[in-house]
Image 1 (cartoon, rainbow, N blue to C red):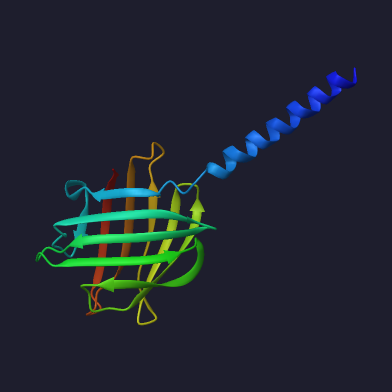
Image 2: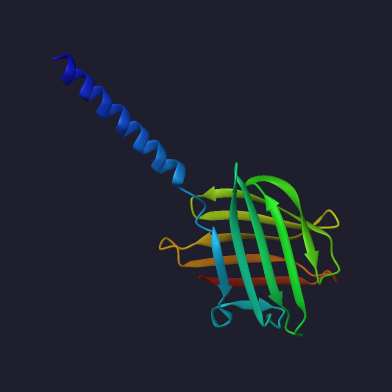
Length: 162
């Protein structure tokens, strides 16, 4: 009888461990590499970039490393990198190929959606949402803001998971 009771306890503990391991493996659905689908994206004002690849890496402890590699419409390369948490705090972006110093804050809205706020020189220059489709194959980033001259901008960037 004691052996049977022990087996039930052991099975219960194993079930808890298995459940804990599964929930620990749940990650940000943005993790991975994404390529811009130019045909599905809109840029106001244009022109759109020639290419754009986003990579999100889970660095542990809630830290995500975001890297963007862009070739502008004029053929100029741009590289952006930022390590951040989804806590709504500002994190500085390292940028090459652009003349701006900026930061980004991001916070989780739900399992598939993140709110992003970009600041340049301490001033909000764009706000938007990044949403991953339920099937995990598409990332859509919608944002509105202002350019360096203060003119309104908006875009819908549609990325496909690689």
